Image 1 (cartoon, one colour):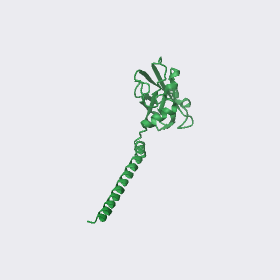
Image 2: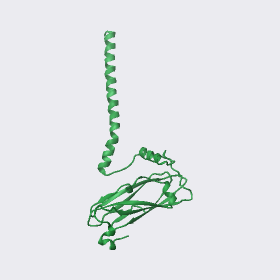
Image 3: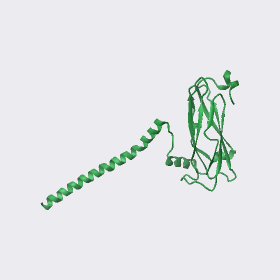
Image 4: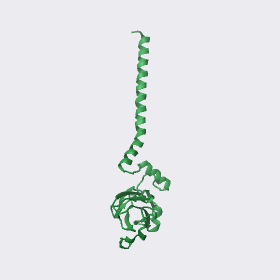
Length: 204
């Protein structure tokens, strides 16, 4: 075979191989890029609302948390107690009553709410903390208290709270109580519980 013909054929084969490799790289990049919206779409369809580690770290950094790089202080352990108050005839409770966590450790706790009334209602939870100085170091990355919710008669919902305790929490604080009070939102889903005739018999 003529040397020039062989060189031309080899060059053509190399170009074809490079083109194929470029297509493979482009497809891999496109697949990786599409994974994020695809993952979010699947989570949304399944009712899963979670933050990635990178998103959580970014949120921590924006909040000024010292351990935004994901480090955990294993030398300390904080007891977090979960308390709920339902200002009306409905059920509202956490999945667990207390947990022991390390500062900097991402933790999720589920809460359950059930509308036991025979009417649609809208409500929102208001958080509080004890001791008071703990509130500045209790960082919620995801919480149902950020929004109002409307539930139909008898409807039950579960909501997560994702939080991390800032390592700058004073060392004399060993226990934190996170308390939520669920209030009905006025003008939505009917009259206020406090104005309803059945309120006198409701649980406080």
